[in-house]
Amino acid sequence: MWIVPQRKLGLAANPFKYKTPRLQFMDTLLYMGESFNPNFYYYTGIESDHSFFLKEKNILFTYEMNYEYAKKNFEGKIVLIKDPIPSLKKYVKKELAVDLSSISVPLYKLLQRNFRIKNSSQALLKERGIKKPTEVKYIKKASELTNSIFNELDLSKLKTEKDVEKKLLLLTLEKGLEPAFPPIVSTGINTSFPHSIPTKKKLSDFILIDYGVKYKKYCSDFTRIFFLKPSKKQKEIYQSLQNIFHEIADELPCFKNGSELTIFSKKLFKKYKIKEPPHAIGHGIGLEVHEYPSLGSKSRDSLKNTAMAIEPATYLKKFGMRYERTLFFNGKKARIF
Image 1 (cartoon, helix red, strand yellow):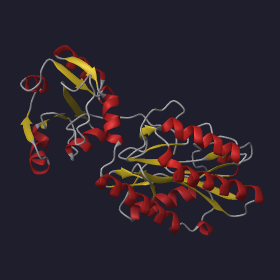
Image 2 (cartoon, helix red, strand yellow):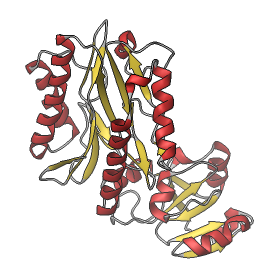
Image 3 (cartoon, one colour):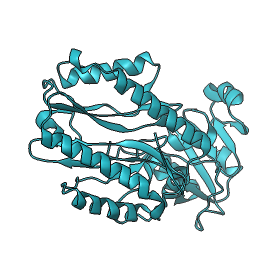
Image 4 (cartoon, helix red, strand yellow):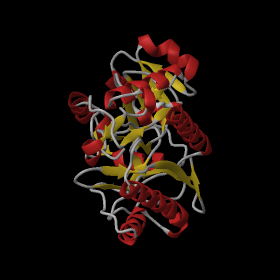
């Protein structure tokens, strides 16, 4: 999946000891509202709505409704609050680093009236891009579960894109899982649109499915082509896309950053005489479907110890094709899930 959703992130304790020169002497605040916040969960290990977390001091500030839950599940100091500002002022210096993408405008203005605010969004995204062994294990499991769902699909009993979407979601529910993102299912001319929404269109020569599930909050992302009555040209293009994926995976140790990977992928599209896609060759993946590293022509993001979804694709007037798999790169070799 290549369209980047709006990120809602947060700030908190740092397991990687990663610090940026501008923020290293500042307290960093993470806030979780009503929706899941990847950064809050990453650093605290819990989901506690309407709570604040001070990263460097490992202090959770929460209201009475979540206090008992926090005592049972959070490893660190817990402060019961009624008004967050007086409580925060007891522990925070005048300057405060905040992930501005995770808070509302009213909350931002409230914090701004009481602290000098710096934005830590990019620093936190980069921190979370480096995957720990446990995270890799969860992403691998999410990938295996996605593959098992694909293997259980019986397209002979399905007639439309909507039928396939419903079956994917049913299989996900039956396994006690949740989608990493809404399924992309397309056939015929709809495959020419990278982010086609499932319709009642009848299945034709082949079906493109872009889907992934979560395991312990960690995402996977796969795209597969399922052939019914393909043409020779369609089969050849799909094989070329698979070749491009594997050549990229094999050459990962040669790349220092996302830009070098992108430049190499462009050479492969020329090699196989395939039209390049209008989107990036892939993206980082973890608690969100789209994370660091970014894989664009200007990216300087390191690829070492990151998980990525690599998705070579091409879109023509009558049809489009995409092949995508999730992998982990330890700096020496890619592990394809």
